[in-house]
Image (tube, rainbow, N blue to C red; front, side):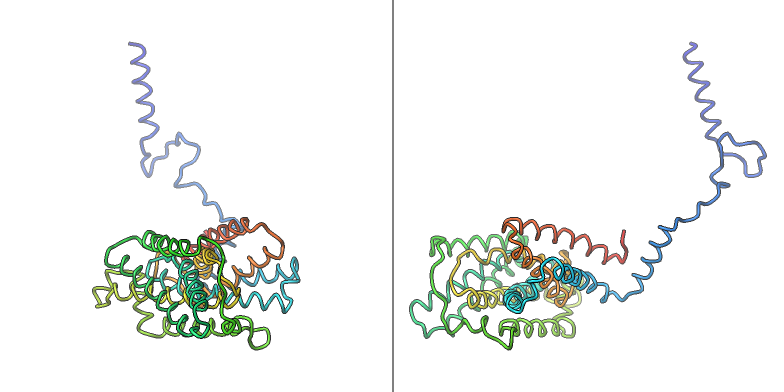
Length: 371
């Protein structure tokens, strides 16, 4: 019984301690200080500075904030490169960087269109490889069929894109699964034909597209920038651009206002396939031979460049101009790792880290804060 008496006494004491005091009671509180009368702690200098920075950041227009990440990152990398790897700015190396940028830039533009409609395309590398095979195969039979081979490459890219778009839109196949399956089909056919062995020659008439130019600026870069400007204009000022962003932000709302989400998505995947084929054509002109697996690295690189440039994975967010700046940032970083004789497999780690950091920073920019 004593145990129960002690327990009852403890419960009464707990209830008394937890009971609220009357407002006008003069009785002393059992606690050291009342929350109502405790002095408010002044904000620390660090917190005040943080709030000032966040407030200033929010006053910057959203468009400027969106470009701030890729532009700032590229500027920092450029400054660091000037110190640690001065050879990067030699005209010969800059010419190589421009040649490589033309390829990555075209693939990135196509990837942006797909990401904007809440998709992803993992078949761009396989399309690029297929373009190399088609050009070399046509050149083997007849060197005068260059124009026909280029048309076939573009049709091949468009066909792959249409198939991807229909699988995603009409059959509700997840974009990741649809494009990965397409990669397996296309790349498998390439390996069956080539046995995985680099073989075949690129027509000599195609090489000047990537090797020649105006000064150190290759023609391929001018082609890439021209296409980029056209896409930027269509997305920022045209009706098609508004439909792309509408479908990416809310497909249901887009349907209610009369937008065919199927048509928009299929067109985005089709353009992505065409741009991947164009990138494969320029890549063939640059390297001059056929490597049946060389395009595989552009799957991750194009996605990383787009994300660094402020394009969201969930769709409806981002600009192609920012993605092109992101491609420049990524390519400069990879070029420095090559000049530094970094293990090629370690370059994949660099790409992965850059992509993870970019995704995190993008969400900070989207919220307009740093926390």
